Length: 124
Image (tube, rainbow, N blue to C red; front, side, top):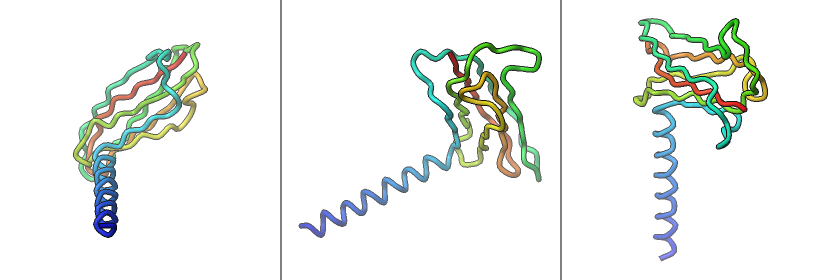
């Protein structure tokens, strides 16, 4: 009986790990900082860039836009990869971010693929 329980536990653990790996490789979304219930949505941007054969597709998101001030502090950022078939891109903060009043985010596709992202910036 103990051996069956041990084998069942191993199988359950293996299936849980496999499910986690599968779900995390289909869409690479990122969250930085803390998005509380009192946080306000400061900026939202939907990004679509078609694929470019033989290249990576890069896109830079700046908040606030050049020439526009922002008196609020960023508390959290979400970058949702909308591609769920394993060919999506990834997001990286290059400057600013939570704790600052500005941020520069770079999005990069996988080689030969495009980008479909939704970026949300929250603050107080």
